[in-house]
Length: 294
Image (tube, rainbow, N blue to C red; front, top):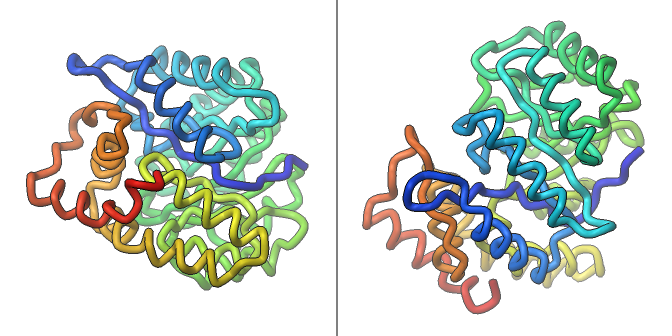
């Protein structure tokens, strides 16, 4: 089983003033994150506005990120699509490029049953032989990958982990204890990431790493070194910005945070609207303790 560990940024996708993918900005952004100490890359997830890009654009991003990566950096591709057939096609392309795993939510706009969730993910792994990190985000998808589905999927050797983004700590505890040694718990609820670490999450697929990479990686390093007090201090420093991120317009704020850090990545695509001046000012204020350190 692929061992997941460290901070894995859920990459934003930079766009230029005409709305095209800005690969120069993406390279500069990734170089900044690498310098902060990230362990790998997760392109074309929800933070990357994958659902607002064409198939060709997503392929281009996956190829660029793969070519940018160095040996030892984990590559996890977002290959979501509205249908199982689409997910299989996207996943096969990621595998051919050389990605180590894919990150998959339930197909959007479907709200499948637990039995349908099991059938979907088994179909993907059967068709591709690709390792899968499940992505449970019920607030966005309208359905949770519940214990009924996880019980049925836990012994599939290609279901290697679950990014848990419900924001419910009891879910993290339940997954960690119920599937120990079978399904890796991956932190996906950023504002309680330290709690996830305490319950065994060794990897953090992290949207906020785009705009506060140094602090995120510092907390991860301190926790791994056994410095719980130090890790908590970093979490306290990040908490105001994390809290504002969770209040809405998540991707817009990530991109604004990148600009505050000196690596602008452009605006979001419609239907995401721009931040108001008040929203920018509020987030900039919360980011101040993080700007000098990344």
